[in-house]
Length: 302
Ligand code: G3P
Ligand code: CA
Image (cartoon, rainbow, N blue to C red; front, side, top):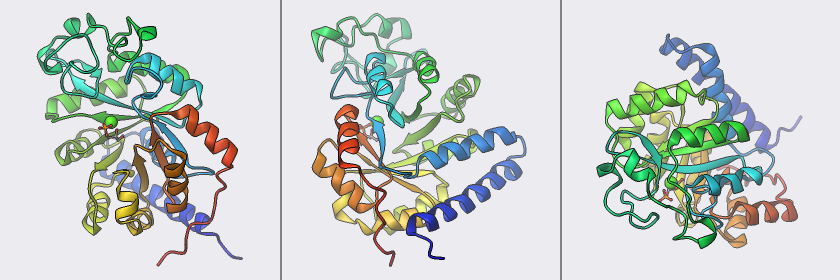
């Protein structure tokens, strides 16, 4: 019997999932079995299945003000696999959805998020810069976002922006636990310290290593950090495409940000990417449906 490259990969992922589950349950004795199983579900969701998966960037950044609940609702309605969002802490240490470290670009305020209290941030309007139609949209707390996420039955990639201390990581991961999010979110960062801190403080959550550059060392680092996926900048698709299969061979998914055209979506299929991060989940879903995006065989592995 001939097993297709996708079949072989599924077997490898299954074995890796079993190994990771064992590490989580045995290595972190306090981790309940249910959490470990949930982690595996999120880990599995970060691998390609029948079709190239959709991750809606900042909600649906091309269609609504980024990182607002209005943007999230557009993505939820499209039936995406994941929404992506960014989190900063306010001066009083409340996680809020915001990409930039400052308020200037996407709200009526100015200055660092970290020097404003939650009450000050929530008093700001965060929609009309995008379109008057969205006037009055507030900056959501992470907690409010989680309520909508749960109701929508969608998963999320939550990017922890900037530097996070141990106490901040512990508090935010506890919030996610309290909201029953182990099976619903993966935590991602460009910062090595954040990823290692999460591995220590919140090992039951799937983690994603974001990178703007990659080489062989990236594959080794991702494996060492035991992340579920690597999130790579779009240009890396062309710069070192062979690394995609190398990362996947060790059971780690490859996500690419931010692809917004049919040319790049087709290229992602050809290159064997697992999921794509896009600002326009509606156009992506329409393309995926019409192109059929067949589960094509991956190129033979060298
Ligand atoms: O998910 C990866 C991507 O969001 C990273 O870039 O700047 O949009 O947060 P950025
Ligand atoms: Ca992001």
